[in-house]
Image (cartoon, rainbow, N blue to C red; front, top):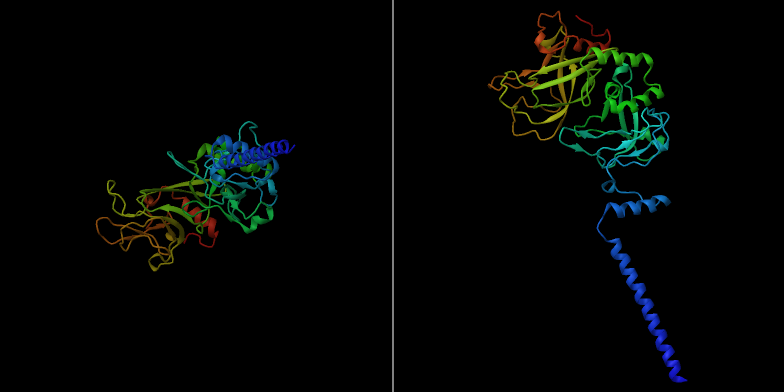
Length: 369
């Protein structure tokens, strides 16, 4: 009897040992499984289970590029936003976004943060917020643009607490109205603007007419409606193009050798920095009695380089034109008026542009002398 009881006890202990072994082995396997290398398959299954219960959100680095699983945007009017219009674009290079009122039901809108012919820059960290249409107060309707407002949370009330997404140069990330109209893959955005009431039939007709008769702005073009606007500039560039927008026109302006007085095409610029600048009417004594536009540096961006001459761009100072031959630098300036005896047609390519810019800014306050 005692021997039988002893055998039963040994078998029970052995069974308990095997159960503990299985439990421990399984626990270790689960630990190893949790530490296995990242793969799209494992991430996909994890997201599927987690998102089903609303417990897991993928980090930006783990997202499939361009992948979206969200409700279509309902509006680009910041006064009518809903929580479902809030987007997180952090780390995405070319996110895909749908609109409730899109024209092409099979094609989502794809945008990007910064793009060139050879690379794309992803949206920076904490790029979450709302797309919205911005119409500068008092400016021509053609100067409207799409922007992205960064907000602390998904509530529409946070819109006024946020700030616009900026480019690496420090100006607002934007897509101009004309680009939204003219570029085929932006048509769903343009359709949403029509539904929201930002683009009337009359404005649509103006855009159509401009597309047929003018040199038109593209994505990244500098478009000005006021002298007070700040815009990006590359001080090493030999050619600078910008557009002045009016009620029914875009005036294209091209200025060659903006930052030097002697033309030496094979000689690189001594400037290497970029920055933010603005135009303004000159108050200098030598420009008294004229409407002369000068350029002021608002902010420098990037490496200023080794050049330390007195004519180098400096924050808060007016822009000077470098003389590679070693002569005295000259102030960068443009006389606005055609009829002035100091007006020179070679100063810029479109003589109607700067008068339009001054008129947009001041009305009749600074009319021709």
